[in-house]
Image (cartoon, rainbow, N blue to C red; front, side, top):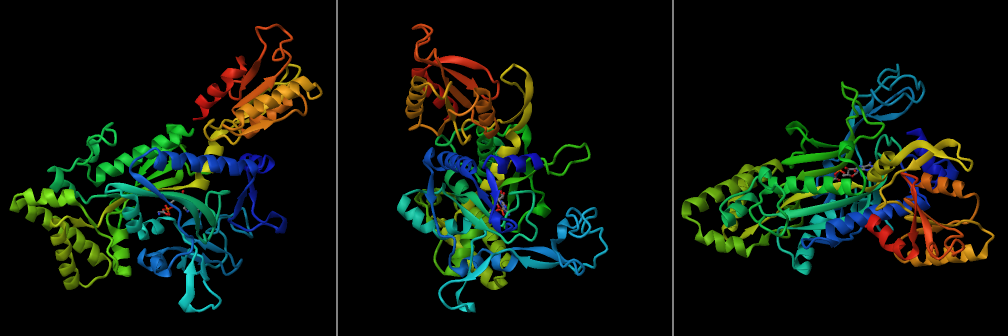
Length: 533
Ligand code: GAP
C-alpha cells in the first residue's frame, strides 16, 4: 500500500486534506488526475444505471435534510459503532478493531495487547451533528447525511409523479456522505467524508406479483433474461439476484477482473433487521485479511440489499404522508382471482405488514388493525413498494481501481537497456488521460504544429495531454505511471519526409504492451473511441 499511497501523492491522484496545516484525519482531496478518474467513474455509473435504462430516474438532493428523516430511518437511535477509550493514552478505538489497530504509544503492540486500561464498549453515533439558522438549540439540530439513500425515499412520491414511471422502477443518486468514523484507516477506504452512488429500485411485493402473474419467479429462473422482455413475474429474490449480476458486470466493465471480486452473501445473523438478503461485493485490497489458505478475503465495495418495504413505511409513519402506490394492473388482476386465492394473498400480506409494524414498536392491537387495513388495500390495487438497494462507495472504488492497476515491470531506456517501470494499467474507460500527444522534437515547428492539430482533433471527444518536453522515453514513462492508455507520436514520417506512404501517419503506443503501430491520423479518433467507450 505504501507504494500506492506514494504514487497517488507524487502524480496528483490523492492528497491529504489540509496538508499544509498538518492534515485532518479521515479526509482526502483528489488532485488533478484523481478528480478526472473520479468523474469518469461517476459518469460511467450514471450512464449505466440511469441513461442507458428506461426504468431509472436521477435525483440530486441536499446534504442537510429535515432531522426527522434520520429518526425515521433509525440513524439517530442506532447508527453507532461500539467504542472503547484507553485511559492511558486517551485514544478512542472501535471495539471490534482493538486486536487489529496498533497502540499509538507502543506501535509494536495492538490496542488489545497493550497494558493501557480500557473502558467497557459504549455506542458512539457516527452522524455529524450541526444546527441550521442563527440559534444553536435542540430545535434546530441537523445532520450531515450519512448516506444518500434517505433523500431518495423521501422524494419517492415526487419522482414517481413527475417522471411518470411505474413500479418497478428506480431512483439513482450520486453524492457526498459523512460519517464520523471512530478510526478512519487504510488510506481512503474508511473516510469521514466520502461519496456514494446509490440506487433504490422499487418493486411490487411478491403478493402483488403473484396476483398479477399467477406465480413468482425465483432467483434461479432469471437466467440471462433481458429487461423489457418477460420479467413481470420477478419476485424480490429475482430482482435482488439481477442487481447483484448487473453490479458485478459493471465492475468488470471498468477493469476489475472477476477473480479480484468476492460475492459475499451475508449470513442471517449478520443481516440488518429490515433486510431480507444482502450481498456485499468485496474487492481483494492488499490490506484485506487473509483466510487460512492465505487468500485475500476482500473488503466491501458495495452492498446490495433487499430492504422490503421498511424505508417507505417508516417515512409514511413519521411524516404522516402516504408512500403507497396505486397499481391498476393489480386491481384488474385481483378482481379476477378466486376468493380463496385472494384470501391467501391477503393473509400473507397481512402477516408481513404486521411483522414490520411489531418490529418497529407499534403495539400489537394497533399493528393488527393497521396490517388488516393494508391487506384490504392490496385488493384495491394499493401497496407500499419494496426496494432493492445497490449502494456503492465512489472512493473505495477509486482505491480498488488504483490498487488493481498498479504494476511494476521493465521497459527499455533510450539505449535499449532494460529499466524498472511503474505502470498504472487503468482500463481506458476510466483512465484520466486517454491519449498523450507528443511531437518527436520540441524545436521543430512543423512537428509541434502537426501535433497540436492532432491534439485539437481528439480534444472534443476525450481528455488529451500535449507534451513536448524531454526525451520521448521519459515522456512515455510519465504517461505509463499515470495510466494513460495511448501515446501518439508525431515524427518526420508524419510530415511525409519518408515518402507519401507514411505521410499523415503517427505512431500509436499501447501502454500495457509497449507495442507501437503506425496508424493514419484519420483512423486515430475511431480507434481510440472504440477502446474508451
Ligand atoms: N444506504 C446504504 C448504505 O449506506 P453502507 O454499506 O453503510 O450502506 C454503502 O454504505 C457503501 O458506502 C459501502 O459499501 C462503501 O463503499 C461506502 N462507504 C461506507 N462507509 C464509508 C466510509 N467511511 N468511507 C468510504 N466509503 C464508505
